[in-house]
Amino acid sequence: MIKVLAVLAVPAALAIAPAAYAQSGEGLAAFGKCAVEADRAAATALLTSKIGTAESKSAAKKLADKKAACGALIGRDRSEDIVRGAIAGQFYLETYPAPPAALTGAPAPFQGSGDPSLVQFDLASCAVTRDPVAADALVRSVEGSAEERAAFGPVVEAVGRCTPTGAKIGFSKVQLRAGVAEGLWAYRKAAAAQ
Image 1 (cartoon, rainbow, N blue to C red):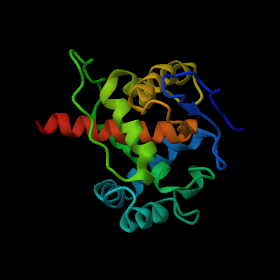
Image 2: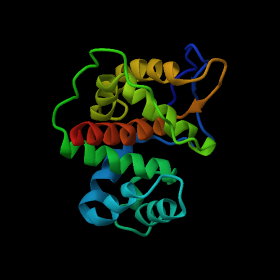
Image 3: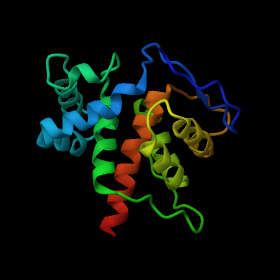
Image 4: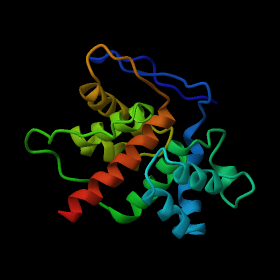
């Protein structure tokens, strides 16, 4: 079953739309947990590598291989961003048992990757910096639950605040959830390092 949010009106016409390869998100958390438990070193190496590089793509492909112990859990979309997001979500939940503090002032300016092929990743990461509490609620929610549905609204609004006026960007629910998970993992690690 494909789960999709309807097109939402936000300042920059951001849409959560089905991707050509949309999948049910039910296996992402299970895949992330399995992959981290089965090969923590490979999972760590994946997130240490820069998204979009040959190294990252190769590592994601190995972890999500159907023949690998955990590969069957992830579903049809075995793309790099989905694999990274599932693993980042698992690391995040293991590392941070409590949500982050709400922002108390204007968020810091966001610096994206500058790579046009990573626009979804950049927007999801930016959304984390605009509403880390909503991002945390999404990552902690059970896929397909009422809590997940409630968490998507504020996250989509935060993505809208990061999207240039007039731009139209589409995400599947799975892509947005994965991008937010990796963005939140990086956001909390950076905050802890300061």
